[in-house]
Image 1 (cartoon, rainbow, N blue to C red):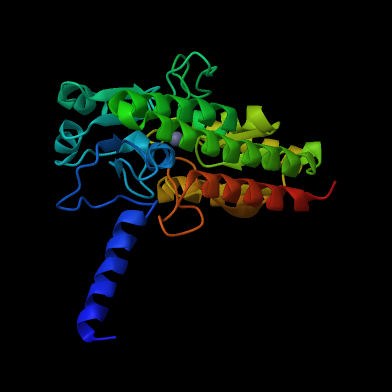
Image 2 (spheres, helix red, strand yellow; image 1 turned 90 degrees about the vertical axis):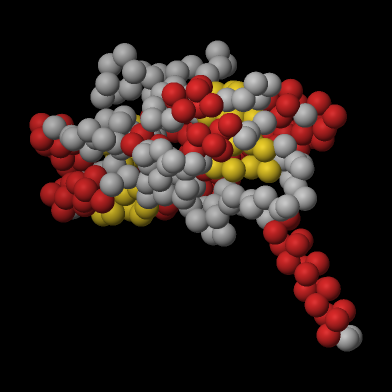
Length: 312
Ligand SMILES: [Zn+2]
C-alpha cells in the first residue's frame, strides 16, 4: 500500500474513532450538524447517549468524579445550554447551582426535561433534611427506566424524523436495564439478611436500599456540603458494632474529608473498607464504570462481595 493510501486509511480510522465513541463528551466536528443534547451529570448524559445512538451529540456539563450537590458552574456552561437542542437534568434539586443557569439560557424551541420529575417515581424525603426531596432515584433501576422513557420523549420531540430510531434504541436499553435489575436482585438474595446493611459516605443509596432490600446508613445526610454532627457518627458506630456490619464503603464523587470519616468509622468499629462505590458520577469514560450499566454493576458486585463475607 502506498504511503498516500495509508494516510487516507489512517484518517478514516481516526474519524471512525471520533464519531463512533459512545462514552465521554464528543467533540463537534466542523461538519457536525447533529442536534446537541446538553446533560447536567455524567449519569443523565449516559442515559441520553444510549437513546440518541449517535444521531445527536451528547455533552455532559459535569465531568467524571464531580459532585453535583456542590458543583461550581464554569463560565462556559451558559453558552453550552444556549447552544443545546435538548437539555436534560436529573431535577429534584440535585443540580441546585445550575438551575438558574439552565432556565435563563434555554434557547427558544429547545426541549427541556427533568428526568426524575415524574409521577411514576415515588420521591422519598431526605433523611437528613426534612422537607427536601432525595434526588438519587437512579439507584432504582425501575426509576432509571422512567428516566430513559423521559429522555426518549424529549429526543423524539426535538427530532421527530428520527423518532422511530430513538424508540428502538430505548427498547433495547430498557431490556438491558431489566437484565441488570434481575442480576442485582439475584445477587442480593444470596446475602444473609442480617448482613444487608450498607454504610456509605453520603445519602445516595436510599432508593437502592428500598429497591433491593438493604438498610442504608451514612456518615452524612443528603447534601455533601454539610458537616455531619458528632452524635450521628457516634450512633452510627454503635449501630455498626451492634449489628456486626462487616464492611463500610467510600465513594468516588464526595470530598476526601467525608471518605476519611468513613475510614474513621471503619477503624472505630473494625468493619472493613468494602471498596469504592460510584454514587453521583460515573467512572472514567474508558473504564468499566464509564456507563450507568457498568457503574451500577460495579456497585452491586462491590457491595455484595464485601457484605457476603460477613458470615451468616
Ligand atoms: Zn448525592
